[in-house]
Amino acid sequence: MVGMSSHFRWWQWRQEEKKRSRPAMVLVVVGGISVAFILFLLVLSQFSGWVAASGVGGLVVFAGMSAGGFLGFLFSVPRIMTKDNQVAVVAAPADADPLARLAGKGERLLSSNTNLERVSEWLTTMLVGVGLTQIGSLDDRFVDFSAFLKDNMPGSQATTLPAVSPFLLVSGLVAGFIFFYLYTRIYLSPLFQYAEKVLRDPGEALLQVGVPKVREAAARLADIAGGPSLAYTSTASEISIDDSLEVIFSLLYREGGYAEAIDIGNTLAETPAANLARYWYLMAAAYGQKHHELLIAGATTRELRQARNAVLSAARRAVQLNHNYKFRLLELTDPENDDNDLQDFASDKEFQQIVK
Image (cartoon, rainbow, N blue to C red):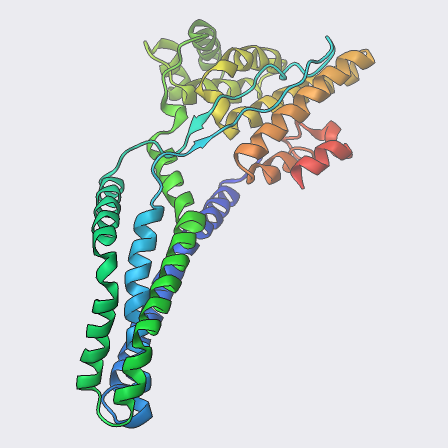
């Protein structure tokens, strides 16, 4: 049913990992280049004349950028973010999408209060407080900084560089702050989010509703096809969301199993399963099988429209939660594949807009 070889799964996982690690790698490369450039400026500062002035001026700018970057990171470390996964649903007629009522609830993506977040909050509060009390003495500090450079810079640059050094320092501070603030907010926050989602996988939550249905289906499947996971689920005192999704997955390989898969899936609609792209992917496949059976049986236009709307709704939800499911859904439309649950939608324009 899923229709993806282990090789493709590995390749897709590798692509997702590369995409996630790219922002961190950019920081590593930028950091390495910065260190090399600082060493170069340090060498220049050992000469005389305008060469030394260039080296010292560059070091002043980088010092400001380093301090600004540190502050930008502290001020932008994510704490708690909420993502409203609710899909707006308008009042629909009786023949409307059967999944329209399955609107997701707000999902907390960054909820744990880590030590980094605590330190960030403490330091930002302290720095703001201390900064406000010392803001009146900034001019004196700038004068002292200029005097220090003037006393240690030989030649004509002893007057030019000290005069512009406070401007260079502030410019570097502002540039570093803006860069790291935006970079953390735009690129590093999703990494925090991903780590939080891994630690708090909704699939590990225990199933609170529909447990008898899942257990009975697992027992029948275990008797027919075997499998230690299904056998365990059929007798386990506690069943997780992942266990129930495995049962739905297995049902889609049985003749007519889509009906029971849909029944169990609708039971899971108000559970954390609704926050998983895989759940909606399986529901799309189940309704796709139902649509094909109705088409073969010559069902009414109303019944076909209901099944189609259900497929579109589930597919759209899966892609919203994880855009990588676009290819997985598209793969199921190939009638030549063994797993062709969505073969009726190969030329459906609305479905193609969702997966492309």
